[in-house]
Image (cartoon, rainbow over all chains, first blue to last red):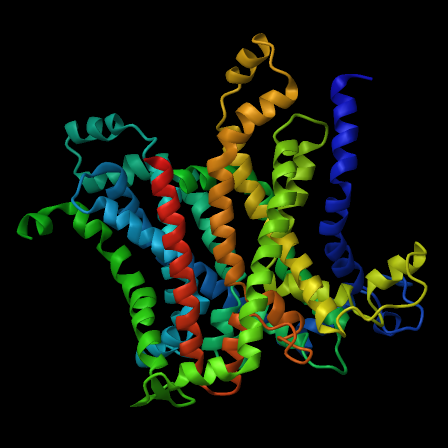
Length: 276
Length: 290
């Protein structure tokens, strides 16, 4: 047995309790989602139902107006991602390319916004959005989500922007391009990897956001997925767990796949941003 | 000022100042103001009432219990996360068969909304039909189903457990980033000098990893202290108000009982705790540097 094989066996053995614990809810979610209803609430519970009932998904979708929740989630998440990028790109560019007075203070300011979570401000935030007439409005969520994800986006982008040598831009200035042209044609294409990671991260954060939508939205047809599903899972009686799990499954799996695909980039970007 | 306005950097960062000022800074000010006023259900500020909201809060035994429980919650979740995440990150930074798969699995809880994680765990822990009871009975660990969430003490421990599971991915990510920044050649040098495996760990890895452990610790303390969805979704602070932490208590006061002024006062208490924590942390860091 080689050293690597031996090491692999030991590591898998040590990690297995944790891996099983993490996978357990996923297994429960998947099996419940496709079980026939009567077998979920049977006296004898089993892992797998007698059949795989895909109709659960269709029933769930129709009964709960699931499409509107997906629409809200997509609208808010795409909107928040675009707004965050729109504000974070120029700011990160300034941080990595310009000297200006108060740069240190500005960084501190961003750090502080990162330390405060929406929840401690919820009363004040609610009142601000009432004033702006943005309560029960998905755009209100976009603005709030963006404000809270900005600092992180700027961290990530800035640490990557700084690694792009200034010479590539200087070359295009000599060729007569304006600063904005070279930013658009030369700089941003080079920065695409960091833009992708930052977008995905911002997108997932607002896809998963719960508290703000719960506080700011009133009309149920506007509820995004986490809020919608938590409403479905409320109440003591007649809880359709197979529907709840089917809904959770649909809301989670696409995100989990993207996340699994990008997690390596995340490790790099996050730790660069955290310490610098 | 005029030179400032001519500096393009100013215009580039301006939007990133304005948005947080509107959505974060102003609400901080507003929370302080609302905490000393009578606020209607719909959020209208009426008369100034001094510290009455605070007095009401501190006279409520549930508030005091929630305050104490918040401290336990933060200590156990952050402590547990850190204890698990450090060895996991160390293992994941080694080369072994199937590392990619393990990495993806460990990161999985991060991809799920906290609210949805809490829902799935709540179902898994369901006393009557939950899969956990089924598994434990099958393995002969339990002889009859256990109603996990019926007692506040048990429910709170389960919430701590869920809190730890969902905090691990972020923490491991930061630590892995830290480990990957340690240059490999210093280990080779240490090996040449005859350092044992343990020595390399305590003299090299641990000190070099320490800034990352610290940053993960600080961020986790802030996140967990403010963490709302797990407790809200699993037990709503119940049964018998026995699982409330500050934030769930405040939310319930403000938005379910309509006492928005008291909610604001509670937020002020939380902000002061967070601020004190940040100042203590920054002071320690500064002393260490000098």
